[in-house]
Length: 314
Image: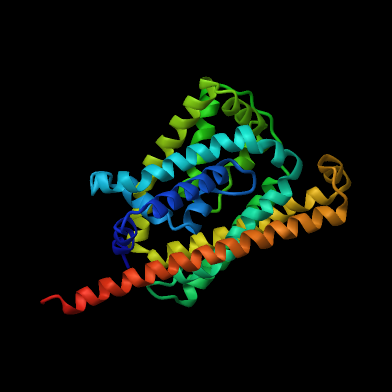
């Protein structure tokens, strides 16, 4: 079943400073997730309820153009802030405590899972949908686990940075895919972060162009699939979210508890584990409470729309 009404209800919510700042902060998180190893900007876009309106806007930018632009301006600003802040200010923390800060983002996923599951079944749920969820989770888990064993060095160049940007764009369109993992495998991640930090236009421009081109090329296809296979697509995405989140533990988190990882962080094993668990719990609680607020707003909006349909003349 198609779900254009879901998109419309999101962008039509009354504007306020609180909602504007909320979208800005969501954009910051998506921007960080887009370049954070082990995570996906697309996953965080789904978690924060931005994925569906973004895909539909990019698939047909002529429809309600200015209303969509007003909705996405703080998100775009937030993404830019997240990417640059991560590269300039937060990189040092992740260099030493990557596992712990990654656990914070995994906590975001855990806390919003009930809301995501509910959204996936908005138009009904069948056993086929659950099979899709399970297969997607297993496939992305095994893919990321196998990819964690890869390490290939690629020489940076403008075409390479364009392709890297396309990978990041693919991670936005395909939730669950972590482009940064692939950039690490190719030996490009630290060079990309350094280029962004130093304001190197030879890195930033082709990277940005690659992101935009990939997203624009694939957005229409993604919107078409959601219109025709809403339940299947959302359960596919949910499976990718689950699989990619689970894969982060053996590929990113657990290595931090080895002797080499503990030496790099300067933490003892008990402190490192407790730090990671605390970040996981904080992320889960914060995102769960936030998603409950989002759900309440969405439910009230849905009730208003249904009431309007009931009293409208036929």
